[in-house]
Length: 94
Image 1 (cartoon, rainbow, N blue to C red):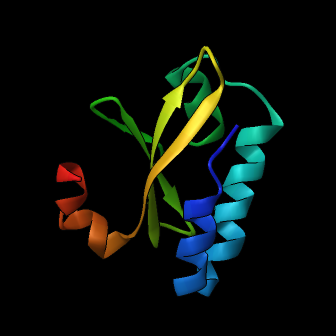
Image 2 (cartoon, rainbow, N blue to C red):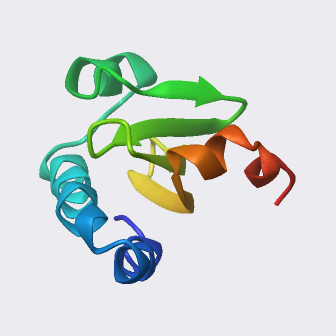
């Protein structure tokens, strides 16, 4: 299960992000991932920052910061950011 609300809200502000964000969601929902290593096989540009996972989306234009619970197969979208917003690092304090 993935929280889709933040993806939709971000896409309302950045319409060109809609397709890559929904493609990410569909890939995530298409199978289960038991570990970070399994995720990396599908998403080569994923990074781990503390207990969060950061995905590069849309040709590295956007960053998706997600909390994943592998056992329950839940993905909670914490932040959807432009690359510039991500680089400012303010998201780490929210």
